[in-house]
Structure formats: structure tokens, C-alpha cells
Image (cartoon, rainbow, N blue to C red; front, side, top):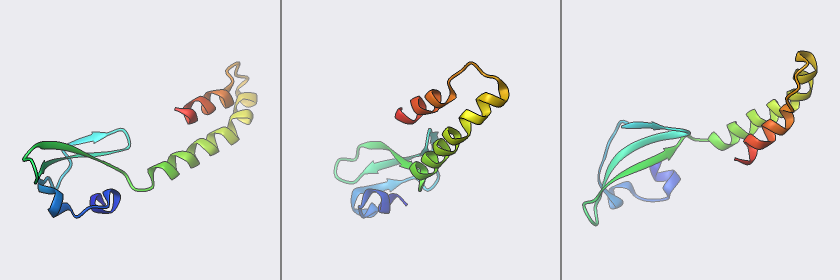
Length: 89
């Protein structure tokens, strides 16, 4: 996944790269690597495959259901605006 996402040959760029993630990130995982060119240790954050498509679908579904949910729950919160705010970041 790393080579595909970054469009690189891992062995050319890294002298070491952990096989297992060392940390979890918001939408991915973090691996420890050592750059071949400089010997510098770096964190390599890898986004989970298709995460953007999944999040976009989730937001679309929440936005579609928000008006009915607000009416059903008699909510005074503008859920559509709230989901829109999440979608814009």
C-alpha cells in the first residue's frame, strides 16, 4: 500500500521500514522508517485505502437522513448544517 500510495520503490527510499504500525492516526496508520539517503528516522503516515470515499458516503447518508431525524426527534439543532460543517472540515 505504501509504495502504491506514494508511487515509490520502498527499498530505494527507505533503508528500514517497520512491518507493523507504531501508531494509529485519524484516518490511517503510522510506520517508522529510515531514509536511505540521509539516515534520518521519519514517521510514515499511510492513509487507509478508500478512506475518503467511505467518509464522503457516510456524510452523504447522514445529510440525507438529517431532516427526517430532526423532525422525528423534534430537535432544535440544524443537523444538515452540522453535517455540512463536518464535510467542509
